[in-house]
Length: 471
Image 1: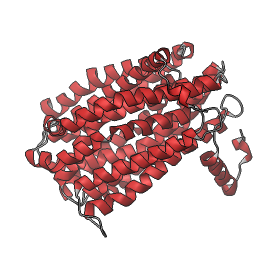
Image 2: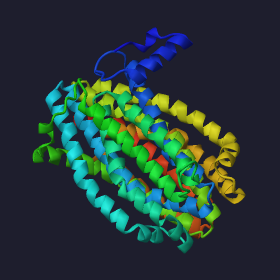
Image 3: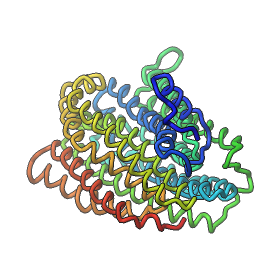
Image 4: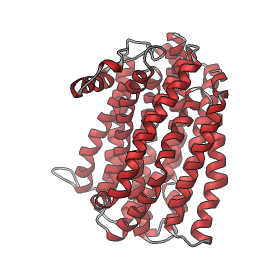
């Protein structure tokens, strides 16, 4: 692994970035910790930025239709976070298992863990896809959508939920690549998926050339097609890998003992995200019950922009999961801890810059995303309020992913349960309904809760029990 310290000057820094996005599998259990963090983080940050482009592209083009269409997309995405949670939970389990086996230099174990994770994901996804497709209008109705929004968005919701398999595999296989230390492949699959989504979204929504005008359904088809192509690329690269992961058909024969290990890791990861997602769904429902399309449209524009800048920070924290997993597997808990603190410092600096950018530059950003004056007002208000806690978000997500990389998915689950369900939901309700702060109450609840998550997770990380978890 090349040392970062040899890169000085703009040209050499560019060469280092090029190395980070083109290098295959790496052993991150030795050498410079700073180099290890950056080699993993650069492609992971780009990967997460590209993942966030999905939501921003959809909301940008759908915003040109009407506020009802934006609301339908937003409500669907809010519920779809359940699918994302399952995908991220499985991905987290796969990353922890594969990284630990790679650290142990157990090539066969890493390959088999990857294959069994895919089999497990296929079994889970069938049920999710069928349920989402059948109950699409009910989902929108429960979320507080008006009859107009339900009529506008039912087909969109059905298409998106029916494509859950591609969402799940996109998350999972990228988690496998990251666990093996090959973050560049995960990034490349998102590049491909997003390129097709960006091209197809305006074409299918507006009906350019030989394509019919499909409106909001066009956005769903474009997103689904992009994800499908991204997964096909992942499978192609996974089948042809020559490094640590050498997956063969025999690895896909169900191993129920290993399946149980995957389940033990994945349920904690899934539950921690489901808990957080349920809280976001509750907040989205509060916004929808104001019965003003401008309020909800503004909230959705703000959330997409917030996630666009949060996901690069999440990419940095994903690097921590790989570093912690591989170093614990190699018997280097001290190096695992130092890697987490190094990444945390980088993340805090990044989030501070984003905070300043959002607070002072939110107006032109929102005006570009949505032309409705009412929606703009609420989106700007949300961005300025939520950005006040960005530093805490950056530190907190690194700590949480350090636990996950160690295979300790239970600690983040408990933290999320207490902070989001026991605190955020009732707190948001009090602020909006009892103290009559309206939408601003939701924004304040987000900031306070994420800050609490940061404080609790950091204190538990310092205690160090995660170093003793066996995977």
